[in-house]
Structures are given as C-alpha cells and as structure tokens.
Image (cartoon, rainbow, N blue to C red; front, side):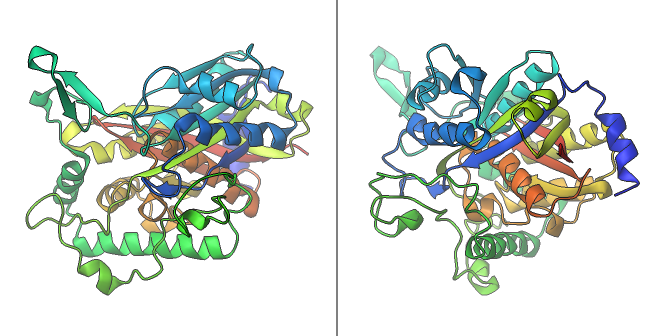
Length: 411
C-alpha cells in the first residue's frame, strides 16, 4: 500500500473542514417482501437505524444538519422527515427524500457528501429505505375516473425502449454473451458467501434488530417478535438445483429466478460529515468520499449503467480497477453483475465478499446504502490504511451511480 498513499493523498485534496467522510453505517435485516417485515412501514424500518447511528457516534440529535434518504416505491410525501421525527430527532432537523429508483440510497449518500464538500458543515444522516410490502397500490385515472392500476412507473419514452427489469437483464446477457453457467455460478457464490458470513457473525455489528415485529415464525430469524437476521440466503442451493430453474423473462433465455434477486424490505443509513467534525466526535476511522459519478446508458441495457459510471469515475480519479481493495455491486441480476465487472476488468469473485443482493435481496431504495454499509464493515474488519473501495449500482431507465471511497484512520 505504500505505492497507493501518494496517489490517494492527491485525490483527497479538500481541507479537513470540507472533506466528506463516512464514520458509521447500520442497516436492518433484509427480509423478503411480504415476509418477516411485511407489517412494518418504511418510516418504522428506518427510524431504528437513525437512532443507532446517533448512538454509535455519540452525536447529539440536534447537531444533525439534514436527513437525506432514498426511496423508490413509497407513498410520496417525505419519508426522510417522517422517519427523522419517528426516530426522536428534534423538529428543527429537516429531511429530504431522493428518488433515483434503485440508486436512491447511494445517491442520497452522494448528495450528502456533496453538501459536506460544499461547506455545508455539520453532520448528515443519509441512506435509503424500502417497504415493498406496505407500498401503496398505484393507479392512473382511467375513463370516467375509474382507477387503472399499474405495477411500475414508466422510466423512459417508449420509443427509447422501456423494458421491465428482467427483460433488460436478458438483453444484457445476450448483448454481452453472458452464459447461463456463469450467471448460476455467481448466484451460487453469493448465497454461499452470505451464509458463511452470517454463520461467522460478520453481519451482527451492522444489523439493527427490529423488536415487536409480527412476522411469520422463523422468518428473518424472528424470536419472540424480534427480527435479527437476513432471511434470503438459501442453504439448499446447489449447481444442480440452479440448473433446474426455467427462464422467466424470455423463451430460451438465461435469466431465471435462481440467478435473479428477490424483492425485499429493509433500510440502511450512514453518518457522513467532515474529517474535522469526525475528529471532534472522536471517530477513529472512516471512509473518505474521494469522488462520485452518475452516468446514463441505453435503457434497453440498463444493467450496464453502473459500469459506465464507475469507468468514468475511476478514469477521472486516476485509479485503475486493479488498485481497488473492496468492491460492492448491487446484484439485481447475475447477468448485469458479470457484464459490469467484466467491462471494468474486475474478476467477479473480487466483488461482494459477503454475498450480495442475489442472496440477501433487493430493497430498492435501500440497496445503494447497503453497499456502503458493507464496505465500511469490510474495511474495518481488515483495516488497511489507504485501501480503496468502490460502491456501484445500476438503475432503472438506463443509469448508474458509483462512489469511490478510501479507508483512513484518524488516530
């Protein structure tokens, strides 16, 4: 790492009072939609995370400058403000909700980092939340005012192609020649890594247990109404089992339920502030935000958006993919995971060291914040000064967001 330090020091050129740093990260268990968290609305999922973040850092609630939260399929309004008040923050603390669909949680963190870098000062709570189970039904006004229900919003004009997520995943697999075998292998590795990490207690410190949840017996590690763990990873999954799954989105296709993520409920958040403020709070370490980028791509190949953003970000920062120590990519589909990592020259086995969304699930608006939560936990588990980390996510409508981070000790 001695060769890395001069370069990383050159990247982080902001003075300490404006250099963004993430000093705490927490998440709820990630549970299948209509499962253990099916009765918990979004603001009640997020509020315990916000309380835990403040407790972890010792920051006074009134010192929070803003609460910036991503959400994709909620009921509108302002879930950031609602959650902050539910968490017990004073009414003087504002909140803003961000919607960039699957990228919302990461984009909320990016926005908060930009506020710190711009000299906004203070401390920000940022992240994302999704309660797919309690999301409202959506309907347009049909003839005579009769509701015309629909399952998702339109992301781009029809003339540009507006495929469903699974169809887009098939498009990516065909366009980039991603075989069924490679997709199944990535899915199996994700489940096995998640199971191994859960068994080792790797997730324990980052998970905020949710008490008083009326979920089904045994789901999500429920114990007397408390959800303690993720419920997605499958112990019985094997190559042979995966091979039996039929294509879901196209006849003769390669994308199956086995190599796709499942919808999930959950929340994740971080504390982001300046290095100067982090020192005042007594933080021992954190992830500097060195740079971020969001890119647009062909909506028909929306799954490649993360690679476009990450490629431009790394080039702009003068960083080679081989220099990255940690990589977290949202595994909505194995096809797009492989395509993005291939394009960046990152071997798939180097990403998502504790499993990803293929095993843990995809809580849309929260997923980008889950990536950052995982990166901070991984960096602290094996602390290497100056280690670079990349979080990236592909987004509906043909976009992608990426953030380049660096682990740094302060004492």
